[in-house]
Image 1 (cartoon, rainbow, N blue to C red):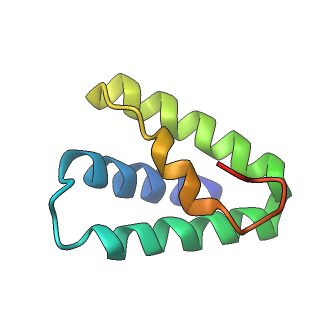
Image 2 (image 1 turned 90 degrees about the horizontal axis):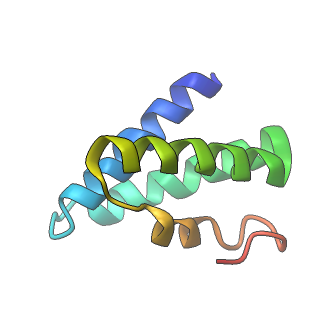
Amino acid sequence: MDFMLEEELLDLMTFCLQNPESTEISEKHKRITEIGGELYADGGIDALENFFFVVKNRIIQEIDKDPSPMRSLWNGISDEWNF
């Protein structure tokens, strides 16, 4: 399951970075938030940190864009996650 969520998260964030004017952005952001909730429920704050680290590095390597601003989509999942 983790691999599938990682790939979905990678696809969603890549789409958002490459298509910032798309009408689908809010839908993609909603799913990114849902994935964060699933990750947190399964592995806590460590899972959020680990997944974001891996996805961020892959996106930077693949399309040379930084998804860090999307970290804030997971705000509210935990008091410990505040970006």
